[in-house]
Length: 192
Length: 192
DNA sequence: TTTTAAATGTGATGTAGGTCACATGCCCTT
DNA sequence: AAGGGCATGTGACCTACATCACATTTAAAA
Image 1 (cartoon, helix red, strand yellow):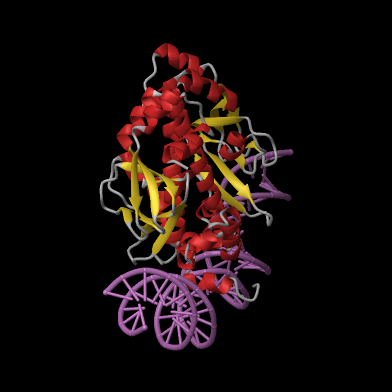
Image 2 (cartoon, each protein chain N blue to C red):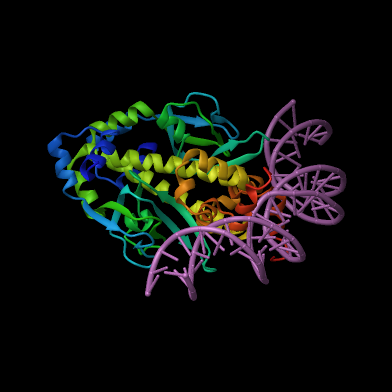
């Protein structure tokens, strides 16, 4: 499917735009291709864009002082990714965005998002709902982190996103779940 | 300060409304008073409203199968609280909302929020930004949960919201931090 | 003012998961 | 085809935090 079609279908799930309106919106997105392992956002840099994933898989992650990695999000087709904190508050990135596989994305600048939100009420609505969903998902994950042990968080993740199992290496899954790779490795032995 | 003034000042920090527009918005809010310990949202019930806190302190929390409590949010003056997941998805509440102290709130129904968002573009903008902030805060807390130990999460919380120290009992602070009350009690002995 | 319940402190003990160390296997590059 | 670096498995040991138990203090209610 064409980039235009992917985005159009995605937006149409939440809000209603005429073809002319959508074409206008689409004109603000920049198509980009990245190779596996490539970096899109680097901690410390200025962040100007958010990214709509067309194909491939990204990870957004934080590296702490001990160089330990924590994954905030895996982003696959039709997911949005960025350092939203830095983006909204015009501050330097504290998280990174990398490609787990080759990836195609549509890039939208912060200024252009605000512009089209201001010009098209339905797009303001769209972005409100996108963030709503992100917020609710984040709260759920927080609860899961407090309530559940590593095993059930692992099962919950694979249940929710089975496709990750084949694409994402286990050490990254561990970094998402908030456990060491060794512990994760021991979970799926002997039906423990 | 009057309820009207509190909400007006709060909204004016994010978006611009004429006095007439604000009065129209305000007419959709219902003023309510609650006593300490009173329940506002009960898990299992239908959720119709979100609550803007004028005074006092609320907690939103989840109770797991072992009857253990996990606090998602403390809400004080100018904070918003509800079971947003249930509210947006029109499903039954999975979290509860209770009063830690006597509290005054403004109640806004889901339908009225959508109505005023549809009618007033600046209010759509306001709610987009409110959720943005919530989303970013939730991501930060998730990272802190994964990265930091109980001691530093405790310090981080008191640093961010010093007023909680005097209002909220320690067992509830523990339920927010995701540690047992015993562990929390042991943290602030002997400068450990 | 008395009674009852909630909040807090503290010891003893258990455990999930972390860390370190090293071996093996797999894929990507030249 | 060979080499180098990730990714993964697994043992040994350690630690932060949980749980249980009971004492004590504080606050609310009758």
